[in-house]
Image (cartoon, rainbow, N blue to C red; front, side, top):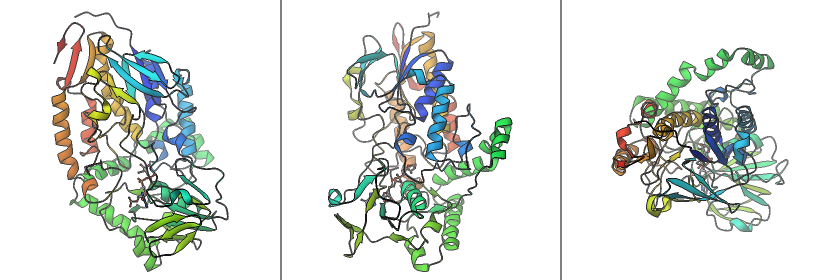
Length: 495
Ligand code: NA7
């Protein structure tokens, strides 16, 4: 059937890595789009986190858009500041910046069935319309403060790692870091030479995977500038990708040989790096490797062996004006406390109020757990697509690569809307229910569900992530099963 191409407006929510990706791609296709960003700068997680030692644990050359390699990384792993600057440069180079409305939070987005469009309420008081919403609002951006008695009573500076206080005493000060995820580990590593006394409060020890670290010389950067093939050789390094494939297979095979190899590598790292047997035992995890997100570090075990650094495994009884009172009665006096206690990982686009067909609220649909068909869309939320939404892959690999694959999938869903053949598209309720049933059954058997606490788990204790291999994800994203979609043709609704 011949249709005229309709005018489509795209509202992209969030100017982080995924929102910029959407902007680049929509711009290349000449589409009419606006990115709404609540903050006054872009960069998402790389804007919000500024703590000392902030590093991406994906090799820098693998943590770029496939279409925008970058020669300037200072080292094999990039700092947060470098990554933010990279996104700023990409947004500028690809003409995305003029499409971003900064300081403009989307507070609601409501589906108008009659007109087949979304009405977005903005923090500025305006209402704007868009036929298509791309939710690129990030995952880990609602800080989770610990529920520790007396938290507010501390007399010094106390703050969450993602709300860094530049006035807090660090140099020559007594600093406590509560939390032992990637963030806590990176902060300890960065402060070991600055604080007079640095205390790492660990509720659970971590598996620490040793990784190489080296800086690139100016000559090497010059070579990268002149020959992008050198960058590709790192980005597409066979061994690196085999490790990723092996890692995701390991996640799905808790008794298999591959997870055993990971555990052995980490245990060897502990044995070979930590000299004091008492400290070594304190740092030894008692759950399966990769159950929590593996920590990649080349320097943490060295840092905790510095004389001014101590590891505290005794539970915290409360926080007092002078410091942290432990359950054994000791008081650790401190000037600064950093809560590296993670994020509410189940929020996604919320608190934005999202109302789909018939006024159905996303909050209600997600009352038990956030879900989406193949992590992309939700029944009754037409023309609404998520990047890095719930049940997407998580692990020690590049979320940029994940978002690019998701965008490739979304583009295929957009095609019938762009040609004018269809007015709306969304996954069918049946397809979504089948996907969730299979996903939950598989997720329970992954390493994430092997009995530890982590941000990977939903409120019912089921891992909230993609439970199959990386290859399976790549295959699924390569081509949508269009029969699983409910497509409203222009004239009539056809299932
Ligand atoms: P994570 O990985 O969620 O880690 C949070 C840490 O905080 C973890 O060690 C928790 O211990 C600890 N925690 C949380 N609440 C408390 C209380 N009440 N007392 C003591 N310790 C507590 O957050 P990150 O910011 O490090 O990293 C998040 C992700 O960002 C990371 O995975 C990367 O993808 C980037 P627990 O293990 O629960 O015993």
